[in-house]
Image (cartoon, rainbow, N blue to C red; front, side, top):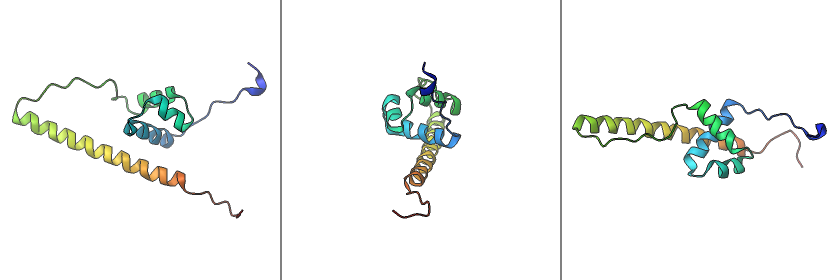
Length: 109
């Protein structure tokens, strides 16, 4: 490898990783598609997912609840998950708003 073309690894802060991960998980896109949009490698997203949310392994097979108590517990769980996803979406919206604001450096061109 030519020493003059070697670039040091890019560093990403936890906030960027979380926003990128949330954006990917809510977009319905593949890791490759989202990574291309963000200008990163798809393995970054997969590694960040493991690091930031270790519970996101393969989707577990869920048995159909049988009793009313099981149904109520499932509804509570789904409501909590829904609220968590709403919170993630709101954070993503805010971070994207911040990132899309024009930079002001004191000079006008």
